[in-house]
Length: 135
Image (cartoon, rainbow, N blue to C red; front, side, top):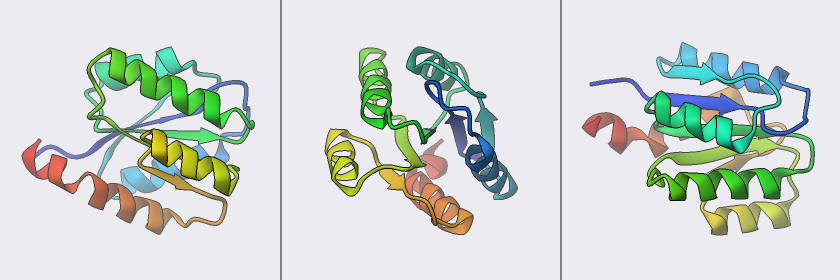
């Protein structure tokens, strides 16, 4: 059984990545394979990395306010490449109204400031548990 593979990415111009690194480390410590793509990634780069790494999930960290654009583009690219089975989740400073819209569009989960790493790890593990068992 292979471990869950997660891409953690910082799309756009946001330069603050402490939270993304904390989440990446927590997922890694929980036994998942984590690929952190670094700052200033385009949706195209993020999706290409997810496909190349055979990722089960993409976690986007967005604090810049561009969350609607960035999540929308990642979901579009996954669909175009026949990879809609890759779970997309994220976190950042995202208004409640936008969270509802992102979920409607296909984002599996949004974590807001104050979410614990334990909560995130448990959610990723449960959301991808069936894939892990099959994988």
